[in-house]
Length: 357
Image 1: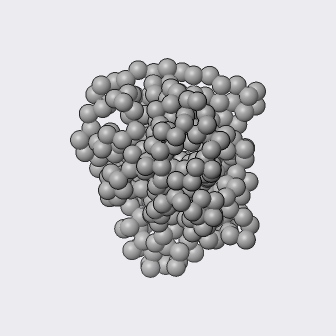
Image 2 (image 1 turned 90 degrees about the vertical axis):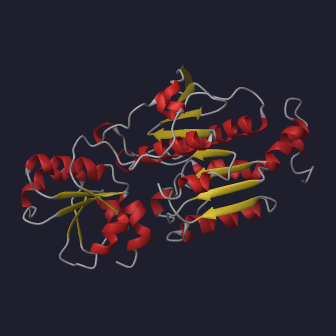
Image 3 (image 1 turned 60 degrees about the vertical axis):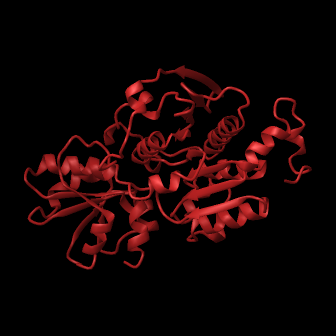
């Protein structure tokens, strides 16, 4: 360990060489290398965390650049992990960096998380957060949570020293209508940097034992008036007893309608007559889409739903599977008995299978 590199923090009375040694031996998994993951990775890497695992399968897009400051315009279309690993190595060559070119799923969550001391949730969707929570409870790993919306952010620490879990704060997954989506509602570029740095700070506190971690407390940040407030929440003991993962972590859309996983949907794409409705915004669709899909943004579904061919299956697709569930609900209500099938995981997970299309 290079003493000079970390001298400004090891000379802190309440940190010192012992805390630095704990960082050097720590293994941290960061799920997501986007708006939250970028500041988390940059600061934990700079501060001397020994091993950083990074789960990310997305590519750099132009719409990322206002907030994901690790990437540049000439890297649009490159794998985020390739760019991130190169930059992080240049920043601190002593860190052991482990890339996972995949999204966190039911199939890989337990095997990936098992090898780490701490998980940092830098994702942007509820299904993955519940998956992270349940896997961490099963494996008895703490995790640091962060979330964004517009000018606001949230941070907390779950499953730490037998403390509350994510399900103690959010017992049930929300419906699609209750979920704000940054692709539709946006986020101010600097807010992920603030929230991600707060997550990095909580990670350092958990790993070294300094200060007081946000266990049992939800920190709320409002960037418009620079205000912070904390909400306390209690542990629900039954939430600490999870033995297996759920069969699915899709959104609760309030309907028993059909859905399909991307691995199965990919096999159908060779049929050019398949009816695919992409409900993302026009901008998202133009950036990447399946060639045999039709763009029908969610806010226009009501006006155009009567023009679909309900005599054959309608596959509904969005970025991560949340807006498509809402669209599915609308179409099912309009045409009772029609076969409306949601593509779980959406474009985010489908990209790795469907780029050739």
